[in-house]
View 1 (cartoon, helix red, strand yellow):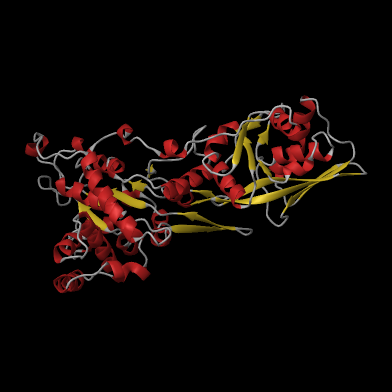
View 2 (spheres, rainbow, N blue to C red; view 1 turned 180 degrees about the horizontal axis):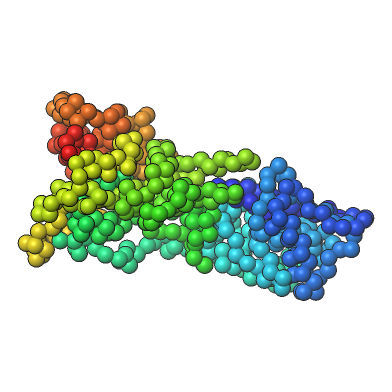
Length: 513
């Protein structure tokens, strides 16, 4: 008897429907076809043990299982449940095989029939809804993750007997219901640290506020102990909340990477990733024989913080150039090519020189002539061009350490950031994938970055004096647009441009000399 069930395979951060055809016929032996890998081929042993342990049987005749489309390589162990239910239906141990045609089944079986959790439950649910399926069976640990997709009955199951009893009509499973509004609400009061803890450094706080308001990349340059890491670790406390669309995008990535906690629903806080400077190229970009997202993609819609920036491998830094510009990265293999989202804020921190005390107001730099420029040259000019804000951090004087006045909390700063982001959301509402000024493309750049005559003259002088590249010119205008948004101004004035230009410290000819 020929029976069809449906599973799903994950490619990149999206899912593909896999048709599992099971046919019992005269003959002997079991065959699994459709370009399966070793883990999929071993499913027969897991399925046979799970069925026999729970009082069901495997046929003694020829059994062919085809995973279609056959041109796509099938990997992993999550097809076990779809294969097992297909075999039971083909051997008439489950009645009414037609009821399986609108159902997607996903889960790995243990030898006793317990169903283990899988990766990618959210993209699988989204794909199932997109293609008209009504029901999705996933492991109990993945049920809330998949349950955020409305219009789809998501059944969380812990044992194969639960699935069998459901299709027999003996014990109907209740679908998992998720309150999306409650799941999406986030509590920022749990965030560690606050800008109230940072004494002085008003110019650095202002630069981070601009970066958060426009989604801009930034680099902090200063001596040891000046507060670079402390300031960077508090950036998440002033970032705006994720939109529902951003939350779904981010959750899909973590779901595919297997980094969602058990019984998780949506990721509601912006990611903050801080890889060590010994990180390899692949750990940043992602990859492997079965491509998985790396730190860059795990930072999507959030922040990638890279402390000791020049100490990262040169090749690891250079691989970021393309995703920083295109906000996605493509990983190609012989049999496949997958795209991962990579719209992140880069926040880097570095010492100004090998000894760390170049430009220090009190301590003398002990580096030999040319060492500062050599140290900075570890970061290529094209990469620095892609960083919008170059911010010099100086040590805090003792008088400011004792001063408790004029300190703003993260909540106060975040309110201004949200107001600026709200303006940008309205401006880009008809542009999919654009949420902030840093993401604007060339098509809309000239429309929203209008400058008055005085501003144009100032910008021309800065370009000629600093010998800025065309990319740096664009970055200055984008930062100016954000500064104007924070001020509630529709036009970019010379005041906004002047502040943006001062954040190009590393473009100055005499820096490091």
